[in-house]
Length: 120
Image (spheres, rainbow, N blue to C red):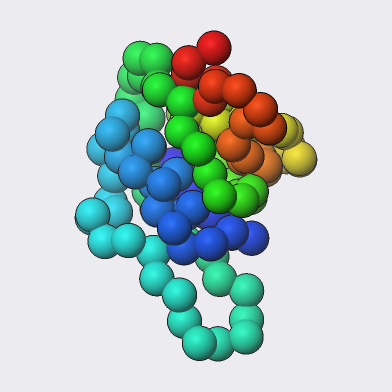
């Protein structure tokens, strides 16, 4: 399944990809997202094999918010969404369904106050 991150800093994109790589095989190496000097919006992509339900993910703080677009089979999208929801505060922004795939747009943030979601 495909994950596209945007509207965030390279460091926050790296944080999200690190959480996902700890629980799902990925085509992304350990290379951190970088920043270019171009004025165009930056996005970072990664492919993940969500062939199992992850265990509990410890809460993770972000410096800002991240827009995450998840696209793939409904079960795989649900598994990645669950992993993200245990590590970050997740708000559903949009959903589109097709014959075999679903696309979900999420807004990821750190907790407003107190412990991250995994520590609650």
